[in-house]
Image 1 (cartoon, rainbow, N blue to C red):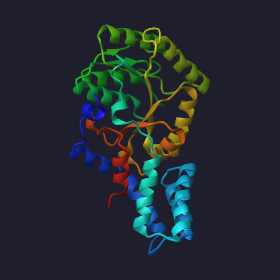
Image 2 (tube, one colour; image 1 turned 180 degrees about the horizontal axis):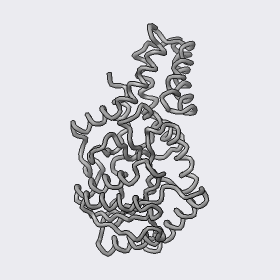
Image 3 (cartoon, one colour; image 1 turned 135 degrees about the horizontal axis):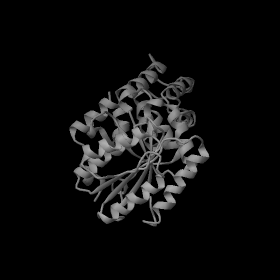
Length: 316
C-alpha cells in the first residue's frame, strides 16, 4: 500500500494545519528576505550578502545557505540582476531540491512483517509522543501495532508510553525500570511475531551518560533484535525538536555517529520560527525526513511532503 493510500491524501484540514504550524518559520524567513531587498526593484550581486544573512538567521545553516547563495550568484552573473518574484521562485526551487524525503510508497515496507522501527532521540524532543501518534495513525489505518518500552532508564518514559498505548489502543511490552533495554526489545519482537503484528515501534533511551555508552546500548539493542528478526530494525527514526534550531543539528550529528539513522521526524514546528533547520539537516545529512509535527493533536503528526512544506513557506 502506498503511503498516500496509507494515511490518505492531505485533507484541507491537514493543509491548513501545515500552513498554520509553519507560520512562525514562514514569517521569520520571508520578513528577513523582504528586509534584505526592501525598496529594490532588482536584486544584484551586492544584495546577496544580505540575503545570505537572512537565510542563516532562519536556522537553515551556513553550509546549506552557501549552496543556495551559489545558485543565486550564478543567476545574477548570467542575467546581471533579478526581480523579487524571480528571487522567490529561485529560492523555492533551490530549497525544495535540497530537501530529502522518501517517495510516498517507500515510507513503510509492509512486505516486511513485522516492520520494525527503532526510535531514537534525546529526552524532551517529543520522541514518545511521536511514537504514540504514529501508533494511533497506523492502528486507524488497519495495521496491527506493538510498542516496546525500551527506555528503561526513566520511569516517566515507560509511564508515558503506557498512556499512549492506551490512547492508541495498541499493546505494549514493558519491564521494570532499570531493566535491560535489549531484553525489552527482544520480548517485544517475540510478542509481535506471536501476534502477527504489522509494525513494531521500539522506544529507546534519550541519552546515556556518554556517547560511547549510547552507541554501545543502541548496538546491543540492534543485535538482540536480530536474534528474532534477522534484518531488524528496518528503520532507525531519529526524532528532533525543530524549536531548538541548530541544537537539533548537533543532536543529529551525535546520533548519526552513534547509530545508522535512516529517517527523521522533526517535531514542534508549530511553536518556533526555527523550522528552517529542517532544510539544513536534510541537506547536510542526506537522511530523508518522514514526519513533521505541526501541532499537539494526534492528527498533527504529518507525513513530510517537501513540495507542500516549501509551498507553505513561500505562500503569500
